[in-house]
Length: 161
Length: 126
Picture 1 (tube, rainbow over the protein chains, first blue to last red):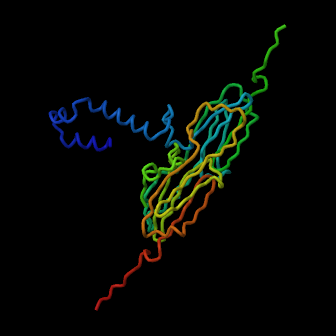
Picture 2: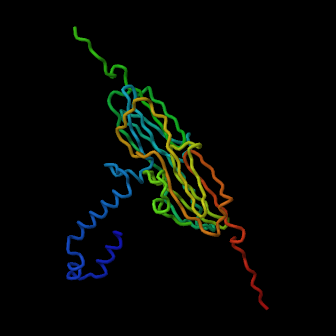
Picture 3: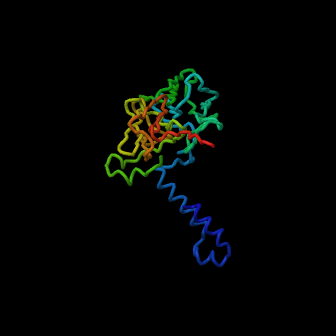
C-alpha cells in the first residue's frame, strides 16, 4: 500500500497535482500508514524493533535466584553454537547454513524468508550473577541459558532487634 | 502454492487467536515443492499439520520449560504459537506429503502429481 502511494506521486510529478491529490502532508500520512500497518501485523512490536527479522529472537526473564535467557534459534547444530560470558556480557553466536539450492539446479525459490548466515547477539546481565554457575541446553530449536545469581545477592529479611 | 489469509478462510474461534507467522522458504523443483518453516520452541507432539482440500495449514504451540516464578523482562517471542496457511495448486499431490521436524525446523515435501511431472517431448524431424 505504501509503495503504491509513492508510485502515484512520482507519476503525477507536478506540485499542483500533488496538492489536489494529497491535501494533507503526504509524508506524515505515509508515516501514519506505516505505523498502522505495523500495529495491524505485529501483535506487540518490541521497542527495539526486533520483533521480527532478528535472529535469534531473545526472551529474557529472571527469578530471585537465576537469570534466564531463551534464544529462539531453530535449525542449528548444537555443538556449533558459541555461548560466551565475559564481564557480565553474554554472547550467543553461530552460523546457520542456507538450504536453498545452488543456482544451476533446476529449482525455483518462491519464498525466501528464513535467516541464513552468521549471527551474533549480546545481552548485558545484571551485576549479581555468578559467572561460574551457567548452564545451557538446546531443545526444539531454543537455546536456554540459565545463570545463577550470587547467594549474597538474593534478598534477605533482616530482623530488627 | 499461494498464501491465503487465515482470517478470511476460517471462522473457527481457535484460529482467530493471535499467533506468530513462522518465516518460511518455499522451493520448487521437478519433483515437487519443499517448504521449510522455523517454529522454535514447538515440541514434536505440539506440531500441527493439516491438509484440507487444497489448503495446507502449518502450526504449533510453544512449550518452554520455564522455572517457577519467572518474570519476563524482555520478550521478542510473546505469543504462544505459530500458524500459517497456504493454498496448494492442482498439480500437487496433497496425499503424499512427507514431513520432518528437527530442532524447530519443519521440512515438508509435497510431490508433484504423476500427470503433472515435466516430460520431455521428442521432436521428430523428417
